Length: 115
Image 1 (cartoon, helix red, strand yellow):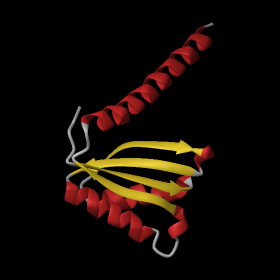
Image 2 (image 1 turned 60 degrees about the vertical axis):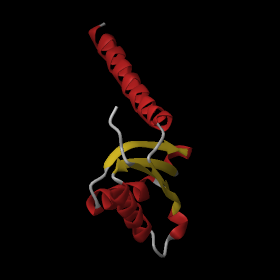
Image 3 (image 1 turned 180 degrees about the vertical axis):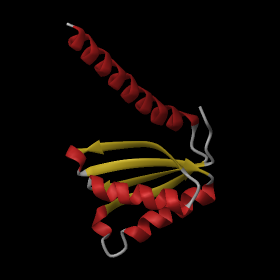
Image 4 (image 1 turned 90 degrees about the vertical axis):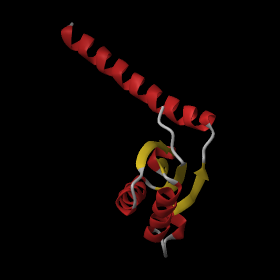
C-alpha cells in the first residue's frame, strides 16, 4: 500500500459537479484519485485524493475555487495530513471490494452466456 503525505476528501452535490471537481483538482496539482463513492443515487459524491501536503492543499483550493458562487454544491472539502494507516486500509479495502464485486459479476455474465 502506497503511503501519502496527505489525503483530501471532497463531498460534492451531484455526480457532474464531482467530475468537474476531480478534473480541476488533478489539473491543479500532482495528486492521485484514490477513491470515489456515490450515495443517494449520485446526488452526493465523496472523492478521496492523495499526494504531498502542498499538492493536496492546492487541489482542495482548486475544488473550492470551482464552486465559488455555488457553495451549496461543495458540501465538504478537507485535508488530512499524515493519515493513519487504518484510514488508508479503509480506503483501499473499499476500492478492492468494489473491484472484486465487478469481477464476480463479469464471471457470472460469462457463465450465463455459455449456457
